[in-house]
Length: 385
Image (cartoon, rainbow, N blue to C red; front, side, top):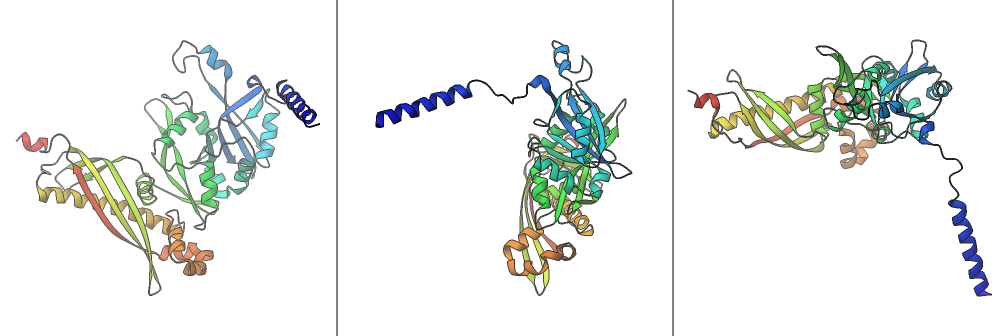
């Protein structure tokens, strides 16, 4: 009886294996897919949603074999449609395509400025519910309409989506994914930040760049901060990668430091009803250029450079805090730190944190050192005398 049961179990297993080997009845061939490389979402003047898809052109791959990038012509095309929402616009756009829209490898989503100011929740609800959009795709806000950024070309990359993704990876500004944006909008701080794209004009063509950061209260964009202020924000969030700092030393010239590495510690304090944030900064860097007459082997000269270094760090961080507080958007995570250290006091202000956040006074303790002076310690100007 036991042997019979074992034989029946084995037979059932074999049958299941054969069924699985017969193929996937509902599979979709690659040749049937319209592969999306980037997506733009805009809001029209009449309140509709305009969905724009940058779609890979399959024949460009075979046509361009053996040639240089872009030699076979365009590798992507942009198609758009309007609708009541993203889902409605997508269904109308799909009706005009001979292939099924596939978002599985789309790594860039751009929200036009009008869309961002109107609110992102409805659009994010669709992107997060849909099974195809990747949670690690990068999210941007664009000056003007998002569609035009999908139509721009990129010299060093095959198409604009690759270019945008690469500059996000390199840390030229905020690098925010779909999952990261969802977490920011769900946080207690009630603030979010996204990299802000801007169109620029070169000698012969248009291109794009990250021109700063768009700040959000809840899901609505309330303003932007500049590239230099964004650097201070990245410092405060411990998200900055290696970078160069150029210091102007009065009338003596400039000193360039690279790479600059920083570590930030936020220590909240509540004293006598006053809320403060003690910001401890540890920074170090190597001098790569010295256009002054200062010899940093001299202790007094080195202290002068390090003082300018500290002042620059304080200025950048102070600007980021000031502008964030003016917009009542906590993207620096002050709220999280107060909640962690003072849970009872936080309960009293969490529902009105956007009013309390501007009252928090920042205090800085900055330790900035020049660790190495490069291969030449004496300035060239001094040696040429």
